Structures are given as structure tokens and as C-alpha cells.
Length: 152
View (cartoon, rainbow, N blue to C red):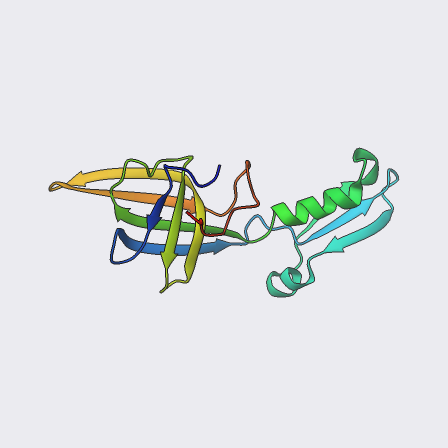
């Protein structure tokens, strides 16, 4: 996934009608304890900032189950942080569908960047086409470009 001919730029005063950002820590893991096969603690990797803000939310792994348990612990911490979901309402555009990307420039909420569309709904009322999108910074395909504005 990335910027393509299907990517639409959403801006207030142009085609962006509303933007709401929500953050959730319900599935957060900010500490990973690594144990050996006899369940003796070997080490703990932790995101100290997240643990101070949200409390300790720990996962445990056995070192024998992974070739690189420290690397797996870092991956768990990276994948299970604070989840941000953005919901936008825009003038209708049939390019705004699940699986595509949308670039958003919204100064009031400070939402700027390239986002993946994880759900879409389109409505037509009184001849006006509106699209409601749920956007995410995360993608299973290409995490390097998430959150940056397209250069095209």
C-alpha cells in the first residue's frame, strides 16, 4: 500500500467535512517478561514512558519458543502500543474505499499524514454524496510510509 492514483487528499474547505481522532490503550502491552523453559525470569523489556502513563500492561514469553526472544519482545512492544483511529467525513469520492490510502491535512485536530482506509461507507442524500471513513496509521503491508504526507 502507498500513494497511488487512487489516493485522495482531504482538506477542510475543499472536501473534508469532519475529523475525529480516538486513542485506545485497551490492547496495549508496554512490558514483556522473558522466561526460560523452567519459568525463571531472564529479562524484561519495557516502554517506561507508556508504563508511567497507563500503568503496567505486561506480556510473558518463553525464550525457547523464539530464536531471538529479545527481538520478539521488541516486536510485541512495537505492535501493541497506543492505537489511534481516525474517523473522517468527506464529500463523496468513489476512490475512497477500504484498502486504499487517503492523505489528510486537518489543522484543528492536528491530523496530517497518509492513512490507510480500514472501512468506508457512502451515502447519497438529496443528491449529495458523502463518505465516512475509518483511517489507520498502521498497515500490514508497508509501515515505513504510514504517517507521512505524499510528495505527489
